[in-house]
Length: 427
Image (cartoon, rainbow, N blue to C red; front, side, top):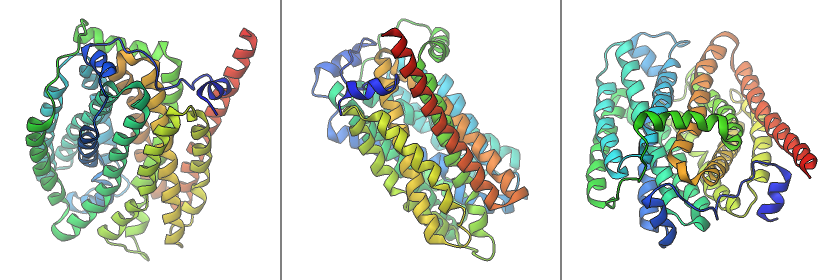
């Protein structure tokens, strides 16, 4: 199957490679160079893993945080929501700076400020102080998207999908390992130690970036910062690829957040009463998601992105059936985690391949706008999951996740069908 054949099936099958880049000197230089080197790709991937872990450390720790700060279990999910609110603000107001400022300086600043914010989380003694620090942690974690967009700029057109997939696989590993490592550290030294350790790691990362990250020229973008922000909002209105892929991101990450935010509650409660470390181990079951991220990028390069999207959404919807049996079968839950993470990350990577191809002259703004949908979906899923579990239990949580996933599948089918009709009329 070729890219053209896949595009004929659905209008949003824009092929990631092969489009000219006109945004700035970095893009022009990247197109004429050998592309993104393996060592720099690895550095970006590791950095994304460490940065995104800061957003997800809290999920296995919610029960301990609630007890430490005297917060009701039905409200503790707001910790995740606060982080995602900060992330959304960062996507709107920080990520677009990648099209305006020197990316090395921007990344270094975010890393250093993240270290301070993480130390603030660890030291927080009041509920509102914790929420405020979590907002700032989320705000600065958007360095991940700056790096993803930078990787897309440096990569050649023929390797763009794979480069994005490889860097995204680092993000997935960061999400998965965050749950395991935070649970392990919390069992040994308490939940606050998780954030103090992460703060130290971010300081070490800043030193590595200072020495290793190549010096780059600032993008040749003549827009002012307010104009840059306004142009990102215009992308919502003018780019159909962004709208459809953004809505898909909102739904799949809402489903993702429903599982990972609420799962700790039944697993830590009787009769299972699992430790933080044991709960964190479930994150390792989702390593298949990291593998899917890289493979999905390659499939998008081959023109199979739409088929990957459809199949992955079917898998995502079906994964909620074994999830419903989590309280009686941990094996079923492990299998479901593998399926769900695979599906979510496969759709996520193909989404990014398509939006980068649609507007190579505005990649930072496109990814910032796209990830706003991700952040909103994650925040809504986290808030809804803990409330639903507190009132109706795990079966209701499973039905909520399945409904959200099914809605994403229906949206994809309707968008493809509508475009097929439009293409027939134009023909």
